[in-house]
Structure formats: C-alpha cells, structure tokens
Length: 114
Image (cartoon, rainbow, N blue to C red; front, top):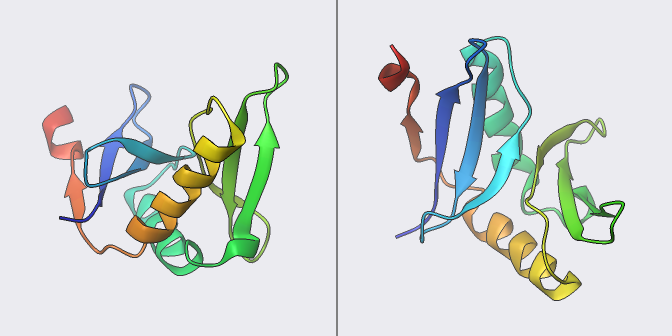
C-alpha cells in the first residue's frame, strides 16, 4: 500500500492537507487554505513537485533540529515536515515524500467535521 492525502478543516474553518506514508505517519503538512479548492491545488502541487530534488529546502530549527519545506516552482512553500532528530532522518523523510507524493488517493476528513 502506498501513502495518501488527508484533507481536514481547522477549528477556524480553513482547510489543510497532510501527506501520510503507508504506515499512516504524517510526512508533510500544508499551510492553511481558505477554500477546499486551494487545498486541492496544494495537493496537485505536491504531486507535481515532490519528485524534484531542487524543490526541497533543508532547514534547521533555532535549537538545531533538521526539517524541510517542499516548495513550488514559484518558491512558495507547499508543505513542511516535522522536525527530525538527525539529518539522516530528515533525508529519509524526504525520500518518503518523493515515494508517496505522487499518489492520487485523497481521503476527505472535512465531512467528519460537520
């Protein structure tokens, strides 16, 4: 089984998506979108950009924990990873996004929020 996207609504009514790996671990989290179509567009951007190594921005938190952002061609952040314990773990996270990002499986959790 491969990964999937989950779209949900925040308490403020905005939309976000997460990319899940086959083991159900969240590997990428989007920004908030004001519309569902915005979140759908974000998913399409991950599907398009996740295989391109140059789209990954390697970062560190102030206290030195590695993480990454996936960026679109226009340099806008599409999604961010969790923080990792090491650069090697971050690299595995990127590999997981590359492997799971192209999936077309989307689970709509917004209906559960009604």
